[in-house]
Amino acid sequence: MTTEEAKRLISKYNAGNCTDQEKALLEKWYMQLDVQDVNISPKTIESLGEQIKNLPGFDGKSKIIKLWSVIAAVVSITLIAAGVILFNYRSEEHPITSKIVQDIAPGSNKATLTFANGKVINLSCAKTGIAVDAAKIKYNDGTKISRNNADSFSGLATITTPKGGEYHIVLSDGTKVWLNAASTLTFATSFRERGEDKRRVTLSGEAYFEVSKDKSRPFVVKVGHQEILVLGTHFNINAYEPKAVIKTTLQEGAVRVISLKKDRTFRKSNLKPGEQAISSEAATLIKKVNVELELAWKKGKIQFVRADLKSVMDMISRWYDIEVIYQYYPKEAKFTGSISRSKNISEVLSLLETTGEVRFKIEERKVFVMK
Image (tube, rainbow, N blue to C red; front, side, top):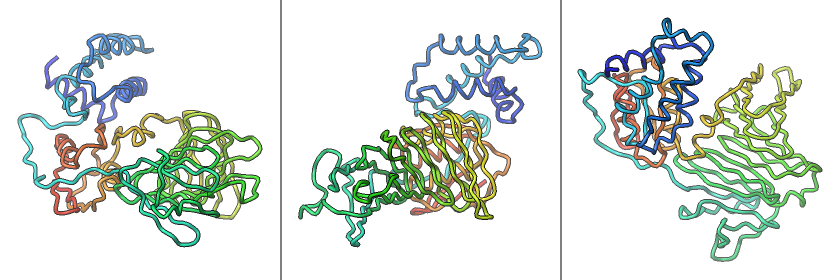
């Protein structure tokens, strides 16, 4: 297969002309691919081709385009060595002149801890997280968080990550929480001290939870216009716009999403593993999703499949702490790609430029989107 043939087939995928089965299989393979591994075996590609040929309705004629050849072409002609696959890219006949002359480092471990008495502590960037034990808070490697031994507090505390920051916290009941950039979690320094029959926390932004099991005291996450009720499970909540849409994705166990409607009544939705609740004040939609894609940020990746430019740039904006200024916006363009969150922003933007849909320019902490 020639490069031009591969491009046409990839365009078919981008245009949404693949069958649902072809698209699902291709995206499943893509999400399972370790994009840091440059040695993709021919056996892996051949296996995908066999799966596609065995799809119902495959007759070898109407579907003469074999997607395993697309994968082979993608592996050979994209920038996989840089840790990226983009199914969109620009023809070599029209090289891109990049305006990216400045650079911005990626986010890192950054957060502040605020207590009920007003005390604020800037947490160490050299540490990855904190742990709460019997109303004492220390770094997760056991070291104190302040020189004056002021690491014991009661009541509520709040951990906040800025844009360009992330942090991990182990709550007093053993529940583990990973906070993404621009997020806030308010929690009790000791759930038992509060004398409630539930373990309650409040979230804004995005976080991944691994809830410690306790059948006598359910775990409740208050976020925007809804609550998520769990006993012990693994799930992700994306609530960067809590007054608009809240996405709750269940990886393991079971949760109940309780949403407050505009008429002040409640609706309850139970999730199964692999499902996502998309909630607004008007309605809640439950659908099957690719959990690996939803949790990519926790695994250190910026990853997206057929996403619009705003969705991609919102992720980039939060992680690199930049302002995005649109001088041009390709309304119909869809982007699929993956890159490590440890890369500088110039690498991310340059790879987006290979689609031929947009160009970028950086001025201080502003990123201009251009045609």
